[in-house]
Every structure is written in structure tokens, then in C-alpha cells.
Amino acid sequence: MTTTLRQRVLDLFSCSGGAGKGYEWAGFEVDGCDIAHRPNYPFPYHRGDALEYLDRLITTGEIERYTLVHASPPCQAGCGLTVGTNQSQRWGGVHEDLVAPTRTLLDTSGLPYVIEQPNGRAEIRKDISLCGVMFGLKVFRHRNFELGRWSTAKPAHVKHEGYVRGWRHGVYRDGPYIAAYGKGGGKGNVTEMQQAMGITWTDVREELTEAIPPAYTKWIGTAFLTCRQEVIV
Image 1: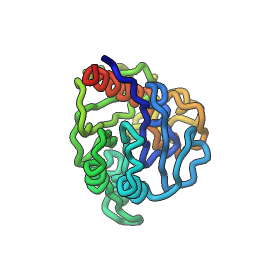
Image 2 (image 1 turned 180 degrees about the vertical axis):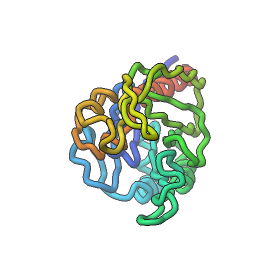
Image 3 (image 1 turned 120 degrees about the vertical axis):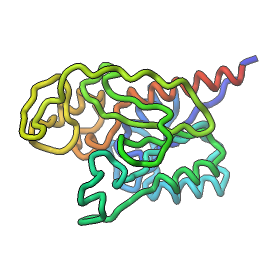
Image 4 (image 1 turned 180 degrees about the horizontal axis):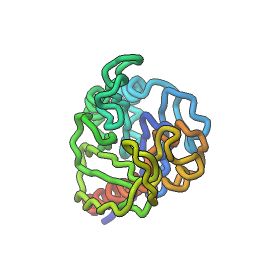
């Protein structure tokens, strides 16, 4: 006998909705939470501190309306783009690493979860590692995902063919891939970043530079729903 569940994901630190959109494509309903004003976020969302909101949902029992929690907590010192830089050493800004407290609350929630982080030194298990090339996208954007209370087979990483367009160490290379971060030096413009990542609902550069391609979480969400159906049947 198969039981049909109402599938809903809580998208914490939701930013512009790259992760949320992928879960929608996989068949989930989506609610977000972000501390910043996100008028382009394509789903209902709570504006506020993500950990305080998660704690409240757990305390009140409202967390039970969700099937899965996705979290992309900031970890400036662990990001591959900031390791060794002034930003990662607390010079010129406030260091923020919310990975560990996020995991603690997610474990308390009792729900299956996903923690997403870029390549770097962030202390998460790399249960899944994805990049744009695996989905035919014109951006590398490597991301790692720790899976809590569920698992799936780790996909093979596709070999990169060609260069990321732009200047690297004083040398300019042309190539099919877009650098979807920063400005200048041959990096992608807003339209190129949108096309490279499959994101159409925001044209804010800062949101695009932080977003993950929805194809990633469509893959993860589909894998999660598949494993859940196998358990229920």
C-alpha cells in the first residue's frame, strides 16, 4: 500500500530562491526564511533570523508541517572564495559561521535535512557534491551537501571541458563557462549569469552571485522523494 504525503520544504537562509525553485521543480511546496528583504523570492517567506525562526517552529510544533528542511547557512571563513582573505580573517567585517548551530537545531527538529555549502573549509560532510557541468549549465558553481536522516547515491562528477571566461593570474582565457561572481575581468553580466544558472526571477547581481542553480535541488529533491517512496511502499 502506498501513502501519498503532502511534501513541503522549509528553505532556510533562502536568499533569492535558487534552492527553493529547484525543490518546486521536484514537486515540493516551498516556504522560505531570510533575514534580508527578498522581494524577488518566488515563494511565501518569513523575514527574520533563520535560526530563531527554526527554533520557534520546533518549540511550537509547527515544524511538523514540513517534510524536509534545506539550509544554506553563511560561513564566510569556510568559503573557497574567501579562505585566506581579509574577510575570512575578520579584517574589515564580522566573521559569521552558522553551520554548527544550524546542524544542532536541524538534529533537534527530527526532520530529514540538507545543509549546503560552497567548496572550502566549512565543516560539513560532503555526502553529495554537484556542479553546473553535471546539468549542462554554463557555470561551474561547485556546491557540497550534507544529508541528515536520509541518504542517496553520490553522483559522479563530470569532467570539465574548457575554461571559465576571464582573467586569471594575468592571463585572459576565453571559454564557454561564466564566472558568476564579482565584477570585471571578463566575469558574467547579469543576463549571462541568469542564463548560465537557469534563474529568471531575479536580476539583482548580488542575489545571482550567491544563488545555486535550481537544477541542483531539483536533483536532490527528486532523490529524496524517491527514497521516501521506497520506504513507504
